[in-house]
Image (cartoon, rainbow, N blue to C red):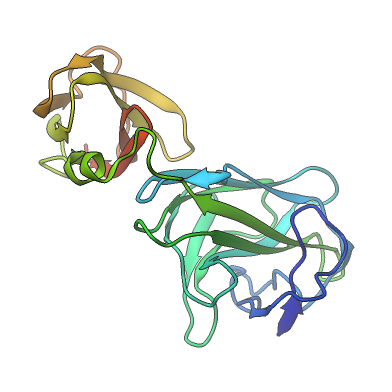
Length: 261
C-alpha cells in the first residue's frame, strides 16, 4: 500500500513527495484498516502537541482527535528523519493508543480500539543531531468507506548557541528516579551546569502538570528532590505511568516513572 502524503492541512498532492508504506491493515483491534485501504474524501482528524522546534531527548504529549463527522475508526502515526526512511524518536502509548510493529512496514502508534473520539501518546525526540523530523499520520473515520485523513507535519531540531551551549548540554543531567517503580517515595537527582532558577515538575500521560517539586534558584552542581506520596495532594495519586521534567533556561529533560500501590 503506497501513497503520496499530503502537506499538513493541505488537500493538494505533493508532486515531489516520497512514498511511504503505512501499516494500515492490522492496527485496528477488530481488523479495521486505518487508511488508505478504504475511505474517500478528506477527513477531519487533527494532530496537536507536535512542537515547531523540538529539544533532543524531550518527551512531548501528542493528541489525535477529530473535529467533525464520525469518530476515528483507527489511525497510524510514525516519524522519520526528514524525508528519509530512518525512524526518528520513540513512542510511548497513552490514553486510547497502542504501539504497533511489523517487519517491512513502518512502526508507530495507533488507536487501541475502534471508534474513539481522541487518542493520546508520548513522543520522545531523538538524540542531538537528528535534524528535521517528519510526522506521518493516516486515519479513517466511520465505516470502511468513511472519510480519510493523511497528514504530514514537520518539526526542526532546536537551534543551539543562545542559552544551550555544548558545555551546558554535557553537564545538564536528569537521572532516573530511584526506586522505580516506587511507593511511597522516590529520589530524583539532577545536575545543573550553572547557578540559576530550576523547575522540576510531575506530569501525567496526557500532559497535565500535577505537581511542582522544585521552583527556585539553585547553585551549580548536583541536587536531589523527593517525590513523597504521603505528602499533601500526592496521597491520592493512583498507580500508573507519570513523567518528571526538569527545566533550566531553554534546556529541558524529561523521564518516565511508575507509581505502584
